[in-house]
Image (cartoon, rainbow, N blue to C red):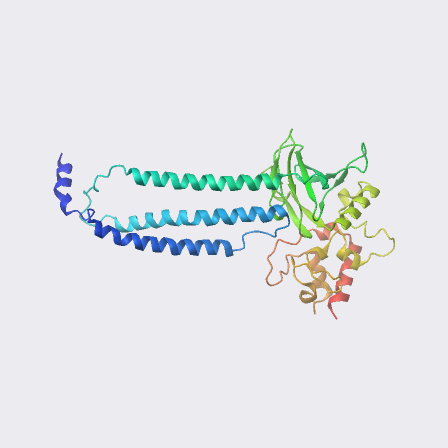
Length: 375
Ligand code: CUA
């Protein structure tokens, strides 16, 4: 066979065959590159703020898992890429080598044992760690600790949240928005009326499919006051992307008050969207009360000196509304995407306050904000 003869004839002169001494030098260079790139990758990976707020105890543990997995996988990736990149560059074909073949290589038992054992041990360690965290975040609270049970029902294209009746045999309280108490374990029993949805509150980090015919669950212990998006994370039809609601973490006292109001008021709020609790006193709508009230709970996201709210999800209103006219303030409520404050991104503030608040409520909020931010 002529090519075989050619190959053998060319072999002694082949640039692919090198002495041991020649091969050693680049190894230390490769190790140095891999170490530097790994270090850079890990530092970047941990410094970059990948996630939304941590609003639950579970979130802290899950983010730690993420960081550990990242720190373990970056060196693997870098190692493989460095060797591949080096080989592509170093052993590329040069002119005149078209018919050459590399030296025959047989198995290397020591290498094979190493590259099987190390990844296997790593996998075992990481999955054990992940399993322990999973058991931990799914665990029921200790005996005697209270736990709130919320039934979450998905349908095309909305979630409904059911709270336990006040007494055995009573009727559940249905709510279009999710409210949970800070610092208390909440167990969500997740169901679906039609197709598969997925109940996800990114700030809580937990998510699970809502599957017709069965009840799935997860637990969350909210830690951070504020409002966070509830998202459907399973493509469920044409309205999937608008299957979004709000989860609001309230102090235990505010939560008890909210639940008591809901129980007293019956289910009429479902379509209205809110506000009647704040107006219960009768007469004019009070902008200050609206601002800090359960709906729309501006104070959960915005700092405002007059209201004493320290939140930083959205812009500090004392600064962002100073010197602005009434039109601007009104637009900031009803069309928040129109002017995005510096340092904040769009799409965070709910854009439907124009519909969920009635005109009198919006007037009251605008009046209150004009009074408090123009001093
Ligand atoms: Cu429900 Cu996507």
